[in-house]
Length: 232
Image 1: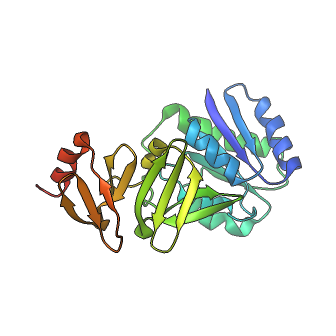
Image 2: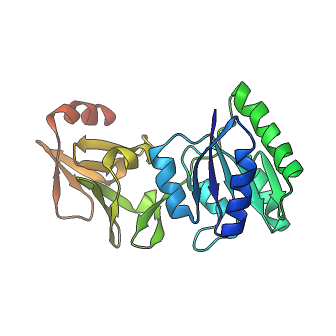
């Protein structure tokens, strides 16, 4: 079975795609999302193989959203705007359907996706993004990796310490860790992930950071791996 996700801010468009998907037994609809906030939560919690995404949506458009994902699923863009086609295909989109969507056109795109997904060839590796999106209140915030000093876990929430502000979001540490480039970030303790470039010194079981007064604890089980990252 192919796990699918729909993202579209128009109720009629979602209902149409839901109906089309229901006609194809090999497709399973995990969620039909009104905005990218919902979609991000689904992608963080479940394995999604194929996304049907609108492009022109409030706050974050579909192309920007897919581009922000570290390891995005396959995507078919479904939009009323044909002028986004080039950008869509630059993201290795499987297809680009212009609304209104007929079932034969939808089926053609799905058959293309099934041929690829059933064979599971090695997909081209897109350039790694330099940012991620996190939910803060009722908005999605773009967080640049360059601006992160460290991340602190607080049960079901995390606190992201940036150069000029702090973001608190509902997310577990293992989820945010999966979205960070491992070459640039490391876990130094159960509750702390630090950007490697931000570490100024290691004193005993504490890490000193550039531009910040606080020292962060280093867990015993993480210290050896941390020192090895610095060739020590």
